[in-house]
Image (cartoon, rainbow over all chains, first blue to last red; front, side, top):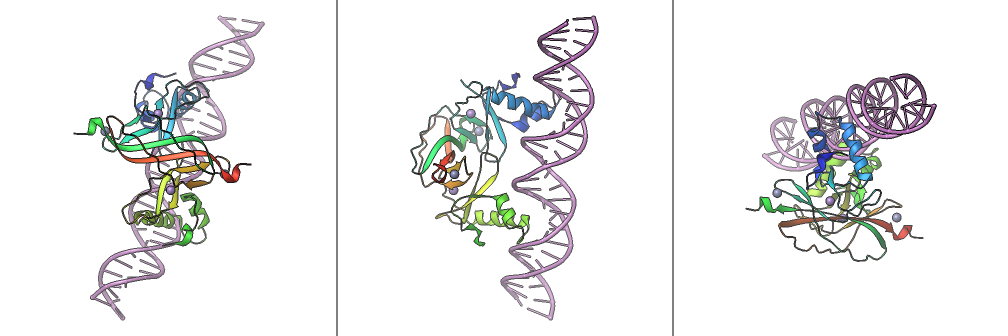
Length: 113
Length: 113
DNA sequence: ATATATTTGCAACTCAGTTGCATTAACAAT
DNA sequence: ATTGTTAATGCAACTGAGTTGCAAATATAT
Ligand SMILES: [Mn+2]
Ligand SMILES: [Mn+2]
Ligand SMILES: [Zn+2]
Ligand SMILES: [Zn+2]
């Protein structure tokens, strides 16, 4: 749909709105993001600040997301990455777990001196 | 500070504001929550909807939170619980991980027929 | 009693995200 | 090409959680 998903790290909705300000309306950006998410092109998650982040999917299809990976935010540069990492959650008594969302924070390699 | 932390599951800030509407102003509720969090009485986290949730701490002290536990939201009743469960995150190359936030969704025991 | 610091109420504000509606662009059928 | 139908966009106004500034009220200290 749109090429602005060439980045391999995540980006906030507002950041996209800002960046595309000259090219399209903010409502349009949000609607395109919705469509991209529904069609399995991007996935979204909520950061510790409550903002919505988007990143491109790998191997998801329309209506079926398989993005169970953790996300990592660097406290120094603020960048958010999708981690290609499988985390297993043990069975929990009295709880039937369907989905897992993991948000890590720390320091990325660029910011480690 | 205030007694409304007798619940053992989590509660949203807006829910508290609503519930205390007759007794105090919403600004006051938010400020008390801030203080309670800073003093280690409650901890907060962001739900999948971007809302802020609060739950009482166990063994945290002023300025030092040790709430590394996962949170679970039931898709049916919407209730959010703190899980007394330790999840280990493996080392990840190029990332120095400081904090871990885990949000699970599924079905709680009350809602399993 | 008086001065000082802390807490509260209120209104106005911020800001990410949404909604309604009119306009435009894309697509099909004739 | 012309008309009709559908989907995509722009714009402005709205929503709702959370914040801020400031004045009024309470509490604490001297
Ligand atoms: Mn991701
Ligand atoms: Mn908790
Ligand atoms: Zn970094
Ligand atoms: Zn339930």
